[in-house]
Length: 89
Ligand SMILES: [Zn+2]
Image (tube, rainbow, N blue to C red):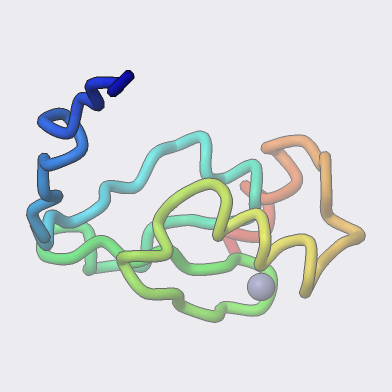
């Protein structure tokens, strides 16, 4: 007895699109702002604590949070206002 496997659905290849990730205001909760001047071309996330700039492909919550937890664990769960203060310096 043979089982029919639906191979059609597994055959959809992902196309590599180099779409720019966009900055979201909620990323400030991880301590990131968009690097000044980069938002009009390729938005880059910049850490307000150490000023490190990550790549556009790192512009997603999981990677931003990883930076926060590995480099600035003491800032986890700080209010947005905490980071706003840094970003205004
Ligand atoms: Zn940092």
